[in-house]
Length: 142
Image (tube, rainbow, N blue to C red):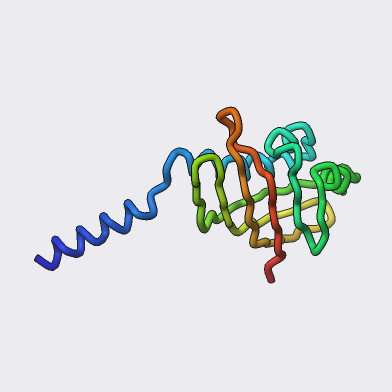
């Protein structure tokens, strides 16, 4: 009897945290955005955000053009950035989504290796069947 109850509770837990395809789509916007950012692919970054996209970064308000200018600066030889994400929560209500996650960037070059971590959140909107970010907030973690 206890084994049956334990199994039932395990099933309930699994289903309550189940990943839906729509949540996966929202999370993929974040992943594609940072993949593009890592290689300074400005057109791909812009395709993942809405026209009025705002990034709250280090106490400043940036547009996608501000971010594009920052990442377009020359990189050191052998520069490589790899991002990984721990999606903590993704909520969807009709054509709006909220997501918060931990972002870890491992940045390497011939002269330096560094790992940077952030706690980030984003608000997305689905328009014409496609999710795009309206707002992102980034807080460095220690």
